[in-house]
Image 1 (cartoon, one colour):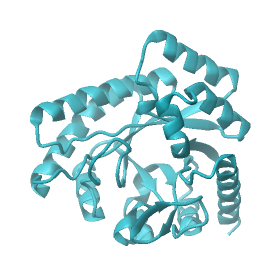
Image 2: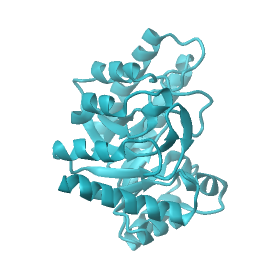
Image 3: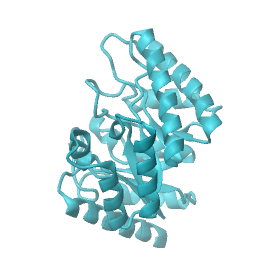
Length: 276
């Protein structure tokens, strides 16, 4: 098992400068993680000194960089903004390579008022195809998430309900686009997590382990304490022989103990799935 973590609980501290990316890397090492995930919002400045310091900190604590979480918004009604989104995503792909990350988490975009489904699907697939060309050049795997709402967004993700997510994914079946499968996000619309997993399982490249208090309500809780069917997801993944990355999305905002207990739960649940 290869374990990483996206520290959503620490977002505000890092965004405001109360703590640093280096602090997160050190904390990840102390937690016993194999790797850490980053948000692109961790890097408002991408100067050489900042990036070199981040790389040096990863090396110092013997921690890898797993995934860079981006918030691509290819459903914006303004074509100029959609082009800007592609330009930004290409820059994020280069950033991921610089940091040694293997994956870039991508999103379809926001459900902007007035955007019709057909047009939105077309814009997303077009944007993804052009980004995939850039990713291939740099040896980066793009991982499309069954997403809900990005940290900097005003609206929910366009590719909800999951039938839209699947439509976009199917339209790109001839590409190396992977899936960052989130174990809880379908619950927002009371959709079946396992039914969706069964339809995309062969394309999962990163498993995002997230939990919500109850179906129909977007309220993050510590992993293993909510409604997400994590043990069943793990069992299905193990049955397919999956040995890729598990990335915990720790968003319970319960301090260090939240990270520690989430990691312990995931390790134990994955082992139990293996035994079963």
